[in-house]
Structures are given as C-alpha cells and as structure tokens.
Length: 159
Length: 312
Image 1 (tube, rainbow over the protein chains, first blue to last red):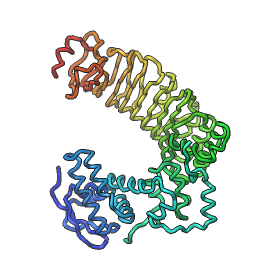
Image 2 (cartoon, rainbow over the protein chains, first blue to last red):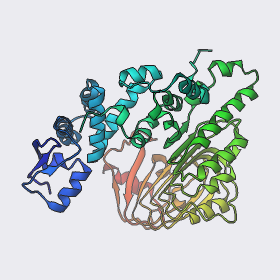
Image 3 (tube, each protein chain N blue to C red):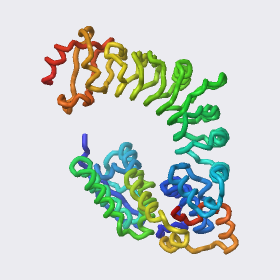
C-alpha cells in the first residue's frame, strides 16, 4: 500500500522541505520514524543536515524513486556520475555524512566511491592539495612514516 | 553545521568506507597525508592482498634489488606480517589471492586474524593444491568462507564449528566424506553452500537443518541425497555423471539444472506438476532449464511426456 501523503523535513538551518512519502522512505531512518508516527503535519527535524545538502539529497532521492522501475541501469549510473561530478570536496563529504546519517545506502555508496576515486593514484602531496589539508607533519615525522612502510611509497617502475 | 573537510571527518567512517575502496598500497600511503591519518592504515576493515598488491610490491626498486626469488618472497612476507600485526581491531574481511610461497606464513596470518573477530575469509591458491591450514579452524567468528584450490584437512577434535557461518564457497577443494559431514553438522547457521569442481564422495549426501541454497557445479557425482528441510533452491550444473533418477530432494525446491540432465530418463513416477520459466530456449541443448518442483520425492521423467509438455 503506497502512502500518498507528503512528508515535511526541517533542515538544521530551519528550512522546511516537502517531499512525497516514497521519496522520504528511501532513508532508512525516516522509514523507521514514519513507520512509528505515520504521516504528520509537523516537520521532522534533521539536525545534522543543512538546507543546501538536504536539497541535494532530495534531488537524488526524487530521481531514484522513479529510476528503479522505468530507467535502465546504465542511464541511472550515468545520472549518478553527473550528480557527483562537479561537487566540490566539502559538499561531497557533507553529502556522504548526510547519506550515512539518514541511512540512504546507495547514495552513501556513490559518495564513498567518488571520494575514493578522487584519492586513487594520487601522492600524499596531491591529496593534500585536492582536499585542502594542511601538512601538519614535521619533516622528521613524515620521514618516519615513509620509512615505516617504505614499500608503499616507492614509485613503481616498469620491468 | 559547518562545511566538512577531511580534517574534521570521522576517522572510523573514513577507514571503513573510503580507505577500503583503495588498493592496499594506497590505503597505507595515505598515512603520510597528515597527522590525523597517520595511523588510519591500522584500522582497515578490509585487507585484500590481491594480485595487484603483489605486483605493486614486486616492481619497486627495493624488490628489484633483491637478488633471489626467495628474498623477494621474504620481503612480501615481511610486509604482510607487518600490515596484519599492526591492525588494531575492526578487521572484517581478509582476502589472499596468492598462496604460492606463503604456505608456512598462512598459519600465523590466520591465527593473528582469528583473534580480531574476522567475518569473511577468502583464500585463493594459484599453485599446486595446498592443504588448508589448521588455523582456519580458529576463526570461529566467520560468517563467510571461500576457498579455491585446497585440500581440506580433518576437522580438529575440539572444533566446535563455525557457529556463525552463513555462506560457504568451495572451488577445487578436496573433501572427504567425514570432513564434509562434520562441517555441515557443526555449522548450524549455514544457509548457502556452493561446491564447484570439488573432489567429493560420488554418492553425495547433504544433511543440514539450516541450508537454504545449494549449488553444485562440475562435480563428478553419481547421486545426490539432500536431507535439508529448509532447502529452497538447488542448482546443478555440469555434473555429467549424474542421472536425474538419482537425485533426491526435499519438497518445494526450486531447481535449476542443465537441459541435458532431463534427456536421459526412464519413466514418470511421483511427479505432479512442473512449471517452466518463460525464458527457456529449446533449440539450444546447453540451456539451463529452470522449473519449480511442487511435489517431489524421486524425480523421473518419460521422454514422451516431456516432449508432449514442450509447448509450455
């Protein structure tokens, strides 16, 4: 039995978003909550998710609620790649945290894989640049780390 | 909430969700990014010593300086020893894609990870068939076990079973009748068993109160008797010595098998109804026929009846 009601969600910065029930229940957390309380008029507070991120999460869930039955797997994958392609690091990480907090498994998979893809094949100095990380290691500490696992830092040479 | 960056990103989440998607070499290399991550490589939930890993540690200058194959092997063992020993908990999946040259090390690696509560072990042996290390029986927290190209040893007398084991995948594994029976009996939560190209007793008896799904691929067996009240589906592919009349299954089982298995049969006995799936291609003799047996004791067909029923 598919519920027709709308669900109200409130972001951490007090903005209200209204979504269909089917969209909301893609989140395991919301699915459980709505299972207990049913559809109410009051907005469900999502303390850990800002309005900017919640808007993106809703975009994702709205596409995916229809995707499973009507769109080919290949097209869904392409849409997913477009969705994450131009996200800056901070937004991507926020989205990952939100997906984890809300229990949206496929969004979590997508964002985790995207972060991993951005790290793959990069040297530590490149990773620092991409993710805007300060190098807080002293030269001695860095040397120690590199010696501890020397094999991991050696550049591969073709035979 | 302020904008997240990697510096205030939870370490545990990062280790279990992101670092595990990187090749092991890169996950370890991440330790040089910043102080926060310098020990992230000791909290990996998934250790995969894949072919890529062995390639990546054999094409580096240090390795190439090593003169003999033995020295290169020792370097690999040292690296793996260190990675495993330095893990401080949270290891869930352990995969080793090459066992050649590591026969004596595998014993201690399995012992070390057995104390970490490892859930899933996948060992692939790419050389001559090896005896499974006895240490495997110390990994009592396993929920999934996968072995390729091993000879199963006798179950140790004090072994209580893999009490959490749900999935078991054995390929090119040699198992005696007694060992097979003991493992089935001691793994009380086993739901899914796949036996592919294994050396097993030719009259295969499977007794399990928990088994739900069984797959038998490329086995040289003459008969199957499955005493598994919870069995829901069975797959029998390329077991060329098997005759349809020698298969004894519990009722209400979904059977997937080669088309040719049905060609060699004598008379219909206790058969009520066969429902065939729509995507059967009768023109190809190697097609898999999927049907649900509603009531089944022994399965025997008559050629005439089968041809007559072909229109469904």
